[in-house]
Length: 144
Image: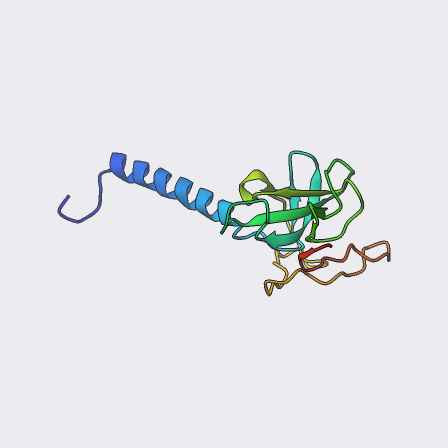
């Protein structure tokens, strides 16, 4: 077409391809998923406690360390001598962002969606609704 606008057949095909590739690209890198966000995993719902490189993953990959609500996990936030975050035994899992579903994350009190601040470091612990302290994320380290 002289106007530069594709026909309806090509336009809808192009739109579907663009949306699909953008969604998959952003999910694989974890865009829109931050420490403190609630997610659904194949095992259970949980909270992202770590986002970043994973020593058992490929170089450049982003992984999520998730504290599950129920003890259906595999670890306590550490794996093979490296600690990424702290949680109760069997409540921790590591997943690639494209393997989890972001749940609705609302700011307390106003109902508006609000991402937590993220400076590339794990979030500091904060009190839970019941007054107890949340699990304390830590910087990955090797244990000797």
